[in-house]
Image (tube, rainbow, N blue to C red; front, side, top):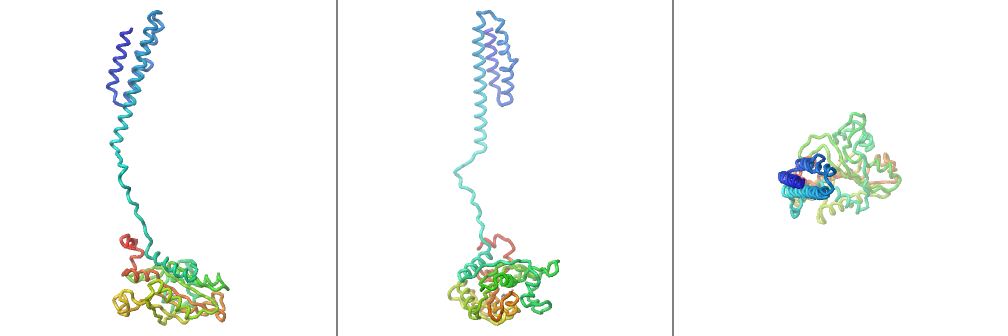
Length: 341
Ligand code: PHE
């Protein structure tokens, strides 16, 4: 029986040498250490042996069993190590490599200009007031002294909605009425930035949507001098101390008198060039003293109150500032354009 145990041990260890993977290792365990393995049969027969033989064979059988258990554990560990080494070489990771740079976004040029405008007017004591982009005909036109069929409506090509009297605002001026109705009877100093929409043929100079920044000041003694002073100061803060400005008379139904402000062309310095069509001046905003009818529509008595208003186009300012020759770049979402600012 001792020789039989030797053979069992040798056969098992030899067989183990051919085991390469988990599955055949499990088969080996069943064959050599499982219930019906030859070694187990030896244990089963121990009872039938004589008193002298039993401890001898029993001890040896236990030794063989321990030896095979250890061999199984070693083989299993060796295979685990080999598998680990394989994945480590296959999935090699160089932790010293520099990380991939995260692409940084930047503010849209319109946003940059808008924020500069906010800052300048905030420094002058103006608050920012937002009003809706979808407006009523009443606020966009009627309340601003532009009745239905008034020829001045031609100045604003309008996107109408299917709901009667509901449209996309063509300018930020309807916000003037919202502010006045909310603030009455307090004095007002606000700017109203936001998107406006016009039913335009899109071209290098015209888009169907663009931002405006409206300004409104209402108080007891506001004069045209305040308007000129505020806007000239704005131009100096926006374009630099030396910039020259001029006011030209103009017409808007909601201001009287009305004007447009030009700044000296910063491309040619006033000499005249292609950008300023040879005039040396660039128009950047419309403005005027709030029309008495508009003050009244906002709830303010024009005999006791006066005010000024203005509306400027940040995209227009950005175009002049950065020499952008086509307004369509602004909403074209081309990163090659946007990355330049
Ligand atoms: N709302 C005018 C426009 O869109 C600009 C403007 C605003 C003019 C306020 C005067 C006063 O052209």
